[in-house]
Image (cartoon, rainbow, N blue to C red; front, side):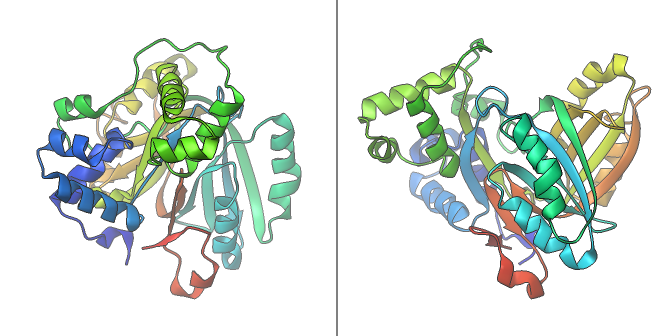
Length: 341
């Protein structure tokens, strides 16, 4: 079933939106906030998770926690190699997003290599060894204006979102570090962000109280919080695109901050390379995308230039959510854990 034809009603969208705000909220907590029966919320929520339309993991700051330097890549492949390369990239442990783009056989995405040695291996070994590659372009993320994990569909009221949001407003310490137990806890939550505290405790060999206290500490210190990925078509958003933008350096901070506040922008980062900004945009259709590009969000900024904009034909990886809409002829090579839509 194509992603644009995902069957969902308003209740599904409300529950998915609540999980976007707080992926670890209990069904009872969500039910109280959105004023629905708990059994209904539990049934719909579990159904969304089971169908792979919603996936909860954990967001951690790549630089502070993973000691990673986020890099963006764009690869052009030979046509026959497109899906194989996309799936190979989606399987990488350091992959954060992978998309197949319109036009030529292009793949774009973000990786989180652990160190400079990993980046050199990526550029000089991993990418060149991929079969069917025509060209490779890699740039570095200089700043995240919006990381994607903090994008919300706008289904809930501000008050409902506030009631569910457990994020801390405390100051973060750039010199903060993780203990071995905290790193192990994060690894478990990256796999399943809704794993019950008791199960986490058993896996870590700790008691429930200690485990809960460490989770609260990580959240309070701004090192970790739930990350929920939702298939956009669940919210009626049928078109996803990447937009490369050029802006005078003196206006980069102001423009990046303004675009991050636009409801259509899920992700935007300042990068090295020939364009200064890359934005991931979600809208209903081509008409809305045109209105976004020609309206005040983009055209209203003096000196802001659209270098290139391409529709995402299919996302392959979004955080921990693997989506696959390859032609049926390619279905025998799905990534592990992929959801066929």
